[in-house]
Length: 82
Picture 1 (cartoon, rainbow, N blue to C red):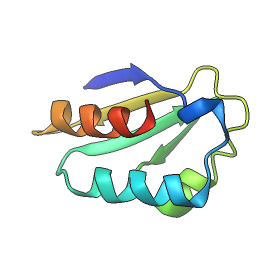
Picture 2: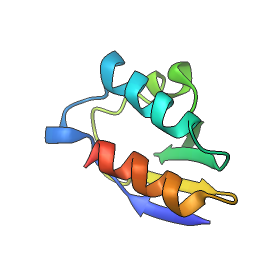
Picture 3: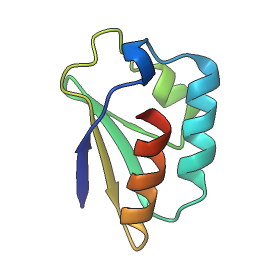
């Protein structure tokens, strides 16, 4: 399992457009891609899950990927957010 700390671009809250890009990017991979924030873990392939994060405070946000192509999945999603 890969774990990487992340923040959204310009430390802005997650909006629908960025959430859609994250879902599209994460969905290209077989790996399970999740985002953890304040004890809540959501599927990065789920628009509703991402928007439910309500991530105004982004301290402690972690991207996790697990599976055959986990390294590529984590890199692609992190590049989108970084």
